[in-house]
Amino acid sequence: MTKHLYRAAALAGLLAIGWVAAGYLRPHALANAPALGMTLLMAAFYVMGALELQRFQHDTAHLSQALRSLDAPPTRLGDWLEQVPAALRHTVRLRVDGERAGLPGPALTPYLVGLLVLLGMLGTFLGMVVTLNGTGLALERATDMQTMRDSLSAPVRGLGLAFGTSVAGVAASAMLGLMSALCRRERMHAGQLLDTHAATTLHGFSRDFRQQQQRDQALLQRQQQAQHLPALVAQLQALAMQLDLQARQSQAQLLASQQRFHGSTEQAYRELAASVDRTLQRSLSHSLAEGARLAAATLQPAVAATLAGITRETAVLHGHLT
Image (cartoon, rainbow, N blue to C red; front, side, top):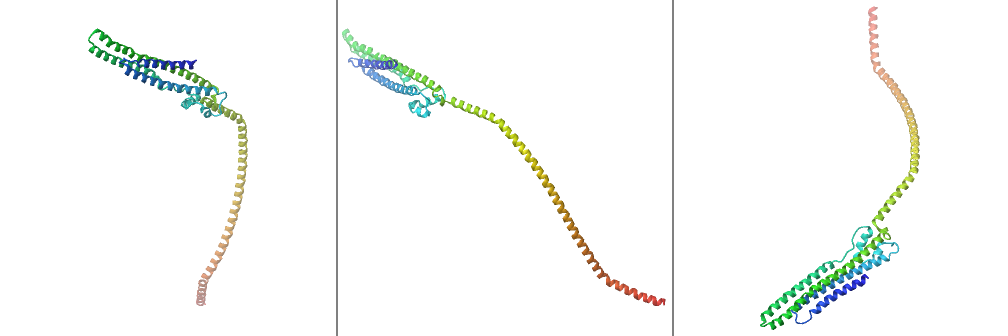
């Protein structure tokens, strides 16, 4: 139903412009040339808007077809996006990811809808100017009533035809606006279908789903850690007991080593003291003997001289006593 209405609106707009343009092909109309040119310009803008809407409708149809072909979640989102028109891929990716991005609409058609009305009014004004100029010239040349009537008939017909540009502009604008509304309606339905698939079939590619998966994985890891925590505590306790036992054994070995070291050091000191004592004794004895020998060697001449002197004196004293 929408397609038939779209085609009927497009055809009605073309027929309105063609009917007005055909009226300007009649002879004896002063406003024909500018009005016909303005009508042809409106036809060009109308065709431009219709072509844009056709591309817009084509992209919408391909998007709807790609969405209807989604019976199961695709393996990769990029493979499915290849079926979507290039102008809609970025927006569709954002919508699947969870962003509230609107699907793009027609760019020129909203402007052309208003431009067609303005062109129609402009054509009417131009036709009126030309018609009024022709009417003034006809009145200046007229000499009697009959001639005046004959001169005014052609400008009056031209004035009626001048308003045809407004009719063509309003009709084309209305039909183009209707076609744009129908295309936007199809795009809105495609957007609703996209949201439905984004919440169901394509939900696995959304940012919320990835965040939920991350939260689930983090929760699962915490649960696993909580389950392994008692075993870890038991292992830590066993390790602490083992470290304590090793510390005690190391302390006992250290004490034994220190005792052996002190014993060996004391024995070494004792042996060293005995050796030093023996060395000192031998040195002292040798020093005393040598000193005595030296002293005897030194004192012997003096003692001998002294004894000799004593002997002489004794002999003298004995002689005197005798």
